[in-house]
Amino acid sequence: MSGESTIPGSERVAPPKNKDNLWSRRSFLGFAAWAAFGAFMTALLLSFLRYLYPRVLFEPSPVVKVGRPEEYIVGEVSEKYKESNRLWLVRTNDGIYALLAICTHLGCTPRWLATEEKFKCPCHGSGFKKSGVNFEGPAPRPLERIKIALDPDGIIVVDKSKTFRYEKGQWDRAPADVVQEAFLKLA
Ligand code: FES
Image (cartoon, rainbow, N blue to C red; front, side, top):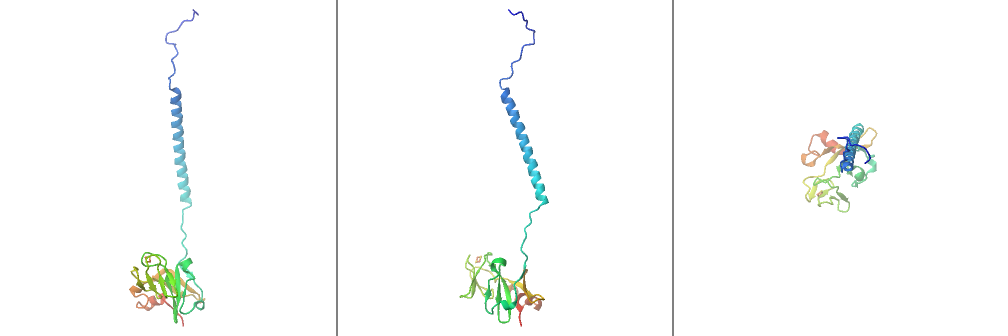
C-alpha cells in the first residue's frame, strides 16, 4: 500500500475517446466558415470593382468618310469598305449609292460577283442585283441603302444609322429630301 487515499470524486475522468475527431471537425468547420467568408468578400470586392469599371462596348462610329467621288469608277462596285464597315459603294453615270452588306434573309454578308453583276449570299443562296434589289433565293426584300452625302470639303460621308428601303419607296418615290439622302447625285 502506498498510503495514498483516494478522495471521493477526485477520480480522473477519462477523456472522450473521439476528442481528436471532435477538434478536427471543429477546425474543419471553422476553416470552411472562413473560406466561405473569404469567398463572399472576394465576390463583393470584384462586383464593386466591376461597378467602378463597367464593361463598355465601344461600337465603331456609323459615320464613315469614304473619299472623293473621283476615287470611284463609273459602273463598278467598290468593296473597299466591305470588311471594315460592311458596306459597298456603287458608282453610276450620275451618282453614287451605298449598300449595306447585310443579307435581308438572316444577316449573312453577301459577295459581289463582278462577272455575274450580282451580289450572292453564301448562306442560303439569295441573289441581289447591282441596285440591291433581290431576285433569287429566300431573301424577302432588297438590300438596304445607306445615307450618303458630300461634306463641305467634297468628301463622301455615309451614315449607317440611317438606311432606306426600296419596298417603302425610299429610293425613288419618297419626298425629295429622303430620296436625295439615299442617292448622291453628282453633276
Ligand atoms: S442569310 Fe442570306 S440567303 Fe440566308
